[in-house]
Length: 178
Image 1: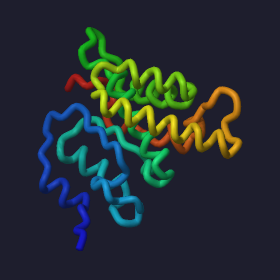
Image 2: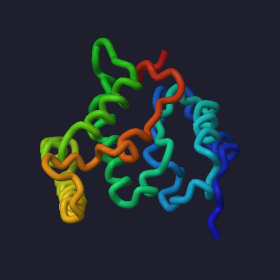
Image 3: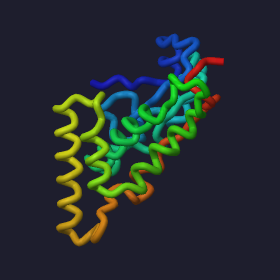
């Protein structure tokens, strides 16, 4: 029997004081939650994370699993790009919200070849993970092309369901604590 993690239990169990940024990459806090009705509304978790001490939370409004494997892939790509865009070592850090926006625009405005080239050129992604990501992107592109979708420059993630779900809550200025 599965136990449900409530926002109340989360606050009791977590202590993340002075946490500048908390990133949730999935709707549910457990990987096997695909139905939003099985967990508290995301706003309760966001409030709980703020109460536990995080000044900024980046989270999806809807789960990638709701759009199938392609949605999970889109969320993965946004999170990878978001962390790259985050200027935590810069002399003048940019707002977290700007990094999130650039990651979303990247996914929306780049075609399959550009996204695959980006993944291949990332030195911090392990080779095995790169190959898996590229294979998934290639598989989805081929399946959608066969269905007659995305003719020409294949913009696989241009629909808002893939790129628009992530939000920033809280301070959102930079990863440097105030």
